[in-house]
Length: 429
Image (cartoon, rainbow, N blue to C red; front, top):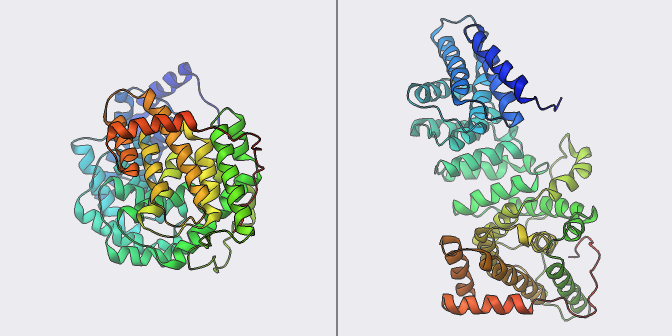
């Protein structure tokens, strides 16, 4: 229903739940925890602990054969729901409850679905409750068997959880993933694609040409839909970095005119592999309507992840992806943290796939100016040092010299006189 309860109602409901604890099943307790998490509540820790204790105790009793609750299939659902809710409520099981969680997961592992496996792994990572190594080995094998049944969200959650748990899936898993994940890419959001690319880059895995082509094709569709819907234009109109955005667009227009006149550098081709040739998924008819929403929701961390992964893997990035991605980045520069700006600076300077030198220089100029403004807001510390270190690396100079160059960038980044704010169009090849 989407209705948020009042504090008075919530207090009464929790008090009633406490009285009913002896009669609650695992699923009942899981449902209460789920509702609290979805509402974004911060209930008393004692109430959360009591509900968690009830759910885990009943599931453990089911395994021991001493509980009349419905079978293990219901308990698998109750367990993953409980873990997800506890992680969202920022509650971490300790002592005997942590041991019960690991025991239950070990018992249910062979029969967990793709979504349950991904949600459980992500919840363990969020709660900082690493499972035993033998469970992770088993989960890795199990995930290979359900790749075909996984969607983009399942894959992104699993890979994010493994990254947070510092678990390396291994070469066999990645080889299965490249082929088994192709169907899931068709309906994946930009944020989910960013997670997959980031995980591959961190694992030092270079995706096959076909997989890269599918990812860039899907990203291009999502970003183009966002541009056609005016998402970036609305961001600039909302008071974001409109000056830098106009400069970036002007550089692209000049580069495109040079290309049409035969003066382009000719390195705007996409990566090998081509577009998807698989059969459309059952939700393909709904994708055009969803594409704008998914792309418009692209956050600074996702933009930084995608560009960082492409630079780290030294893979070609087609202009149909690079231009709208950088357009969103430049429009949202004030929202980037210092760490995200440093990542974006390094990635933009390191990407070897963009043939339009003027476009790349305009992007770097806008980023340097944004970094200078961010630097003025930061106290001395790790983030400030990181930003200066990246700027110094780009200019091959000391941090003090980098600080001076950042200040110069902030003073000189201006929209050229008479430069129009170009309309947002699907980028050309």
